[in-house]
Length: 293
Image (cartoon, rainbow, N blue to C red; front, side, top):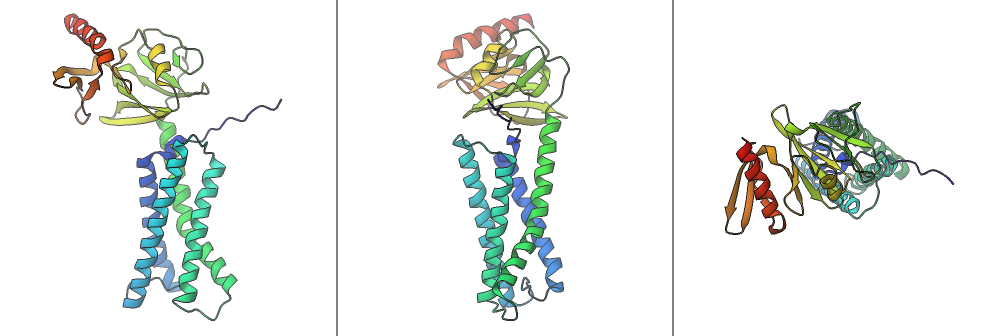
């Protein structure tokens, strides 16, 4: 039997915030590139000096940006439908975007600018190559930067005996929280004192922790139940179907008309609800820790 190759695709590339960052950087880079490139090309019509070229340029930019937004939205939605993304699929998807925008540029060049000194194949090929330079470079840079940022958030540790994984779960009192993905690969190691809460989102869990005074988030493909079972005897506690909180970081536990809520000692974190299923357990745990203090 052939061994299945592990898919090490960085899921951070599919996070909404990172998609927005990547697109914003790519569009700005492409605009600057075209502004610099156009004066040196005999077939370029990109410009803002004349009214006709300004209108055409604006149309091209707006349509291209809308196309990219729709494309990335579709990519995000498909990733949520349990369709596995790989680096090859991701690269082919981005190349498809480049080809489509390049063809659109060629169509505008032939029918609106009416370039007649060149063949259709030449115009289409050149448009795709220019689009590749305008978008391919920022695509690559953004992907590398986001992946490296994701790797920096994954702290490598040598002592990994306490790891939450969808494999075997081990529960111990620890100061370091190690979480692996559903394949058993260690993805995040964070000090318990820096961890605030964990949120479930579809088949992923998002870990929220502080780093250099800022709240960071890290998405891992791991079941919420696995994390709850692994760290059952630690300050990490389930308070809702969607949330696990670090009880040591809770500043206030308050009761409202619609139930309990917890507030953290970190400005910017919204109150987290406590469901009726877990309210008695949370109140008991919090009261016990308050007495100890």
